[in-house]
Amino acid sequence: TTPTPPAPSSSSSTSPSSSSSSTSGECNPADGTCVEELDGAVRVHDDLDSLLQVLPADVRDKLLTHPERANLLEVVLDLGRQPEARFQGSLTEARTTVEVLRQRPVDWEDLQSAEEAVGQFGGDNRAGIEGTLHRISALRNRRGVIVGLTCRVGRAVTGHIDMIRDMIDSTESSRSILFLGRPGVGKTTVIREIARVLADECGKRVVVVDTSNEIGGDGDIPHPAIGRARRMQVPEPGMQHRVMIEAVENHMPQVVIVDEIGTEAEALACRTIAERGVMLVGTAHGRLLENVVKNPSLSDLIGGVHTVTLSDEEARNRGTQKSVLERKGPATFPCLIEMRDRTHWVEHDVEMSVDFILQGRVPTANDRRRVMRDGTAEVVIRAVPYSEDEEERGGDSMDKVAESLLSGAGSGWEDDLTRRGGRDNVGLPSMASSSSSSS
Image (cartoon, rainbow, N blue to C red; front, side):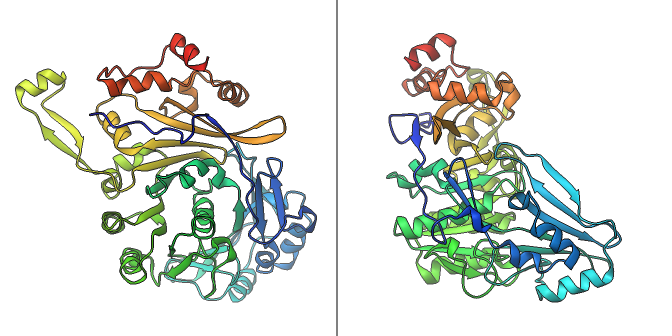
């Protein structure tokens, strides 16, 4: 039988964003440490002053009063080059703007002062500032001397979990979830908030496997952003898979949170954990589901892919060549979410989507967007034919797409469910079926 496509947990395709509690009390934008987005639906907390203390005095002074301070993504100090600040765009933009902070290039004294303020770098050339979520990464020359620093701002964000609140609160909340997305889209930020919500609001035993202290912050005491979740630090990046297994064997978690799954050993550790009935929430390298399917190190996360030779009769029945690609077994992560941007996610039922992709057909995925209606942020969910690119869906502007989502037009959900009755006609939903579905 064909697996059931992912479905919204409620009968309505629109769910209001719940009010998320702050990790550090009420949000007061006036004090500069908290910014509200989407009329308060998303709250961003940072301790930017701690990071700015690492920078040269003239660079620090300019950023302290910068009008775009709340959007600061990172500061780059490269030897012999002008220091740069990079600012992120709006919630729906992937564009990053770059601003030169001073005309004088970075010299050895600037780098040495910053290195002394930060402290010791680990084997992954990363360091942090104790009690914060900020990350400083080093560039070294062939002699091992630091010639560049990337000072990345770490922020505790509440509210993004509303994008999948129905999944977290549903009876299927034990399903493992894998997040994909371009660098900087907010994958680590999201799983940090998921750790807090599952531990504090759902009462689950949560263990965070923190390889670079990026989820729970630097220092021995985890950052309040992960709530009551426990944190296991990883001495070296190559040991992440061992610490994952140790977490399950020694501490009996119900949920394991892990960031940047990138090796075959880590993928195998994920499967071992899932087979023990533990929920996994993780991120992996790649932007789209196809990236994981084609990655031999990570394909086990979605069930693995192998070549099968069909008999002549079976090949004729299927209308394919004798050698075809098929999924090896059940997926380690039954649910996969592509984070297109901070307000647009695409949810896959992994086994169904992988099977369809390998067969050259179009799967159905849940399109999740946060939109504004009457001054209120709402998460709108609809089932759509999967597309890698927004332009492939007709090139509609974001406003037109949001209007279509709010009206419920063209979901195609009932049409897609006909596959369960044995009518395996996959193509795009017709306009007629979309209109009847919406009414």
